[in-house]
Length: 142
Image (cartoon, rainbow, N blue to C red; front, top):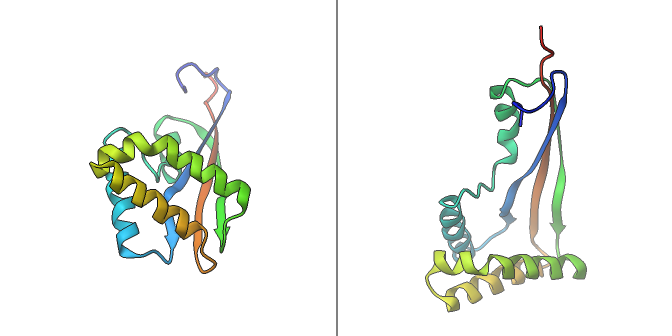
């Protein structure tokens, strides 16, 4: 992206950090299923913690005048609202093929999905992720 950016041009990079990863409190069985799925997804290039790496990537790419912002993206203290519950249900359905490869059975995937949804419906839990935004400028030609 930096290569094709005009000298003096700005680039905005945004990505999540903690996507599918941060829940509290979390029981050991649910954590094991999440860890197993994230490990499998990491082999496909998925990185649930890429957001925190954008600043470093931007520096390595030669961008200057870097500005970083972090804000809540998912923030569900207690029982998730109905709209976000539907979105998480859909998100997990989309991930089912990858989850099945990680878990090696559809039954295990269905159990994991139910555990995640049950966690989101509990009054005593917190689920969150953050959105990192990094803006940088390509140095002007000298």
